Length: 138
Image 1 (tube, helix red, strand yellow):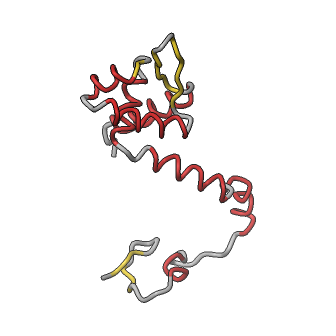
Image 2: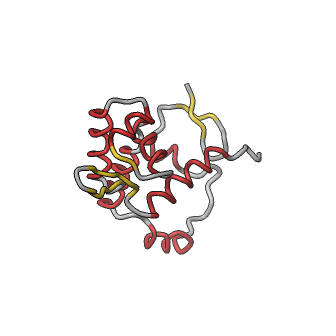
């Protein structure tokens, strides 16, 4: 089995990772051309938190809940009915979404209504949905 270098030439798997990542053909090292990028690289702890955040969104039921809450604030029983899920399952997913600050709630008497935490969550949801709906242009 082969892997491909930057120039799409087959190279054997026995090469080290560092060897596979080298530019092919080699060009002069331009440290000044990339050193400014150090200011833009995520810090490790923030990268870890972001990875956890995105892995949380890797659950289809959580995304379905967000899709409903992007439209309207609802209580658990209405969410469960809309999604055809048990109230227990919806509550479990809402708890996870609350911990990650994607949803929050308000109480009205004995009722609890859930909504997206803020416009950032709505914008993230809408951006991903729009991206997936785009037609291939190439």
